[in-house]
Amino acid sequence: MAKRGNRIQVILECTEHKTTGLPGTSRYITQKNKKNSPDRLEIKKYNPILKKMTVHKEIK
Image (cartoon, rainbow, N blue to C red; front, side, top):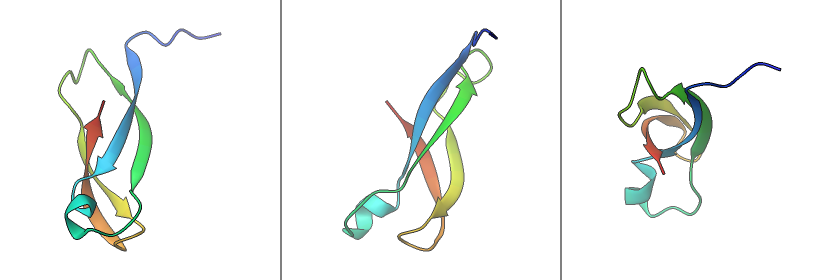
């Protein structure tokens, strides 16, 4: 089996969805290299509830 090393699993949550007041959340699970990107990830992903591309930030 391969070693995982510096790769960790992170959860991305939509930032715009919280302000709308609609039920549910848009979350994605991905991996990142903790050594290369120690800061929190911020990626534009598709939100199926709002039906548009929104900014998703890493949560802990």
